[in-house]
Image 1 (cartoon, rainbow, N blue to C red):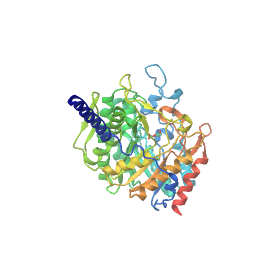
Image 2: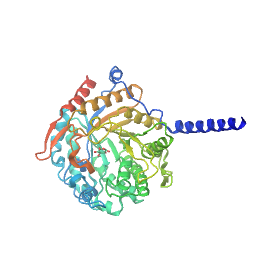
Image 3: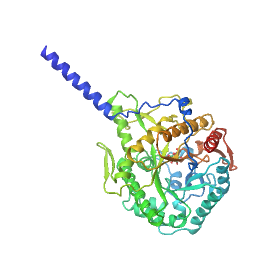
Image 4: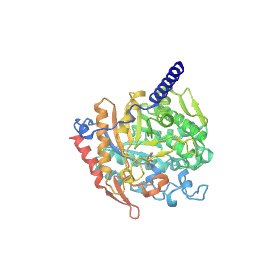
Amino acid sequence: MITLLIILLVLVVLVSVYFGVLLWFRDPDLNLRFDFAKLKAIPWRFGKDFLWGSATASHQIEGGCDNNNWFAFESAVDEQGKPRIKDGQKAGLACDSWNRYKEDTQLMKALSLNSYRFSVEWSKIEPKQGEFDQAALDHYDQVVDDLLANGIEPLVTLHHFSNPLWFEQQGAFLQDNSPQIFAQFCERVVQRLGSKVKLWCTINEPSIYAVFGYATAEFPPGEKDYKKAARAFRNMMLSHTAAYQVIKRIRPEAKVGMAVHIHFCDPLNPWNLFDVLVAHLLNKNMNDCHFPYLTKGHFSFSIPGMVNETYSGAEKNAFDFIGLNYYTHSYRKFQPSGSDHFPEVIKLPPDQLSDMGNEMYPAGLYRALKLITRYTSKPIYVLENGIADKADTRRARYIEEHLLVLNKAIADGMDIRGYQYWSLLDNFEWAKGFDMKFGLYKVDFDTQKRTLREGSRKYLEIIQKSKA
Ligand code: BGC
């Protein structure tokens, strides 16, 4: 009898510990979904100063980026001799936006956009270390002038995945002096554009740059080493701070932030403790870890038995806003054997996914905003959100549902100042080449003709409604 009681007691304790740990680590918003009919009943809360825009990046649209890490990667092959980019595609002339920027400004105007997020190409501005190209700086000055003349607020990104070759060859952000090297470049840009540009995004998605470049090998330099990924990530966060300091020294009135990619990894089986722990680990390292760094100066990227990269003592609160890039979420499971211990599992059939294979999950935008507001009450700008949808059957719904969620977040008191749709144009989607069609405007890459997609009209409609 006593033995039975002891066994029962042990079982109760074990079950309690199991579920206690599970609930402790499981995201309570895991199953958040919205009823869009209800969200539609919330009055429109986007103020008149709200920034409606679209986003691009230099290497993806400009053309002629032939002195950077991506240019080199586009000609490289992996260990099996396969090209790094799908079907060996190269960015080449891309959308030729270097020459067609005035035409692009008019495309924004036609959609009633009042802001534009674009990046300056470091390899064009500083083609050799310490040598700055005045013509390249003149070019961006003209782009900014053209935007302002058309009532469009420029939001300039200083680093969006592309490095000058000289910097890449030195070891890029693996170098512990990379923050100083990057800040010197930022200084020149801000000296030149700072009287006109009020909003600056220092670095785009350090987590993606670092992990894709050094752990999953999808981005240059195409390595598979989590220790390097963690070091690059850490140094990019430090580079943000160095850039923030230099910008504020030159232009104290500037508003400076970084673009953080938030992608929730949710447990495939929410009652399996191992799936829950894997999801927690990934979210902590890829999402949450930006915020203790930004608010408290403490960085930590750690996977037991694999990597433990930390840094303490960076300047606290060295940011004026958080830039949020949000697209989707994914499901993960724990796999004890094999090379990938936390593979992604797709639950939906392909016809319900974007062309990138992603689930449309607008509630995740709310979860991402909530995550940010747990750490800071500073303003938030959504700096990227969009869908690859060649058939243009899902774009309108994607835009509408995400903006309904954003409206709810504002109604709930979150300080959200802008939304940049990714992307203005179809463009070079990194390792996937030109196959992914994110553009509000379709681009015919033979003729460079831009055509508004039907689905994009929803964006115009919402902007007009918010201004009415
Ligand atoms: C990047 C963009 C990219 C987009 C769509 C973001 O992670 O910042 O450059 O094109 O995702 O995949």
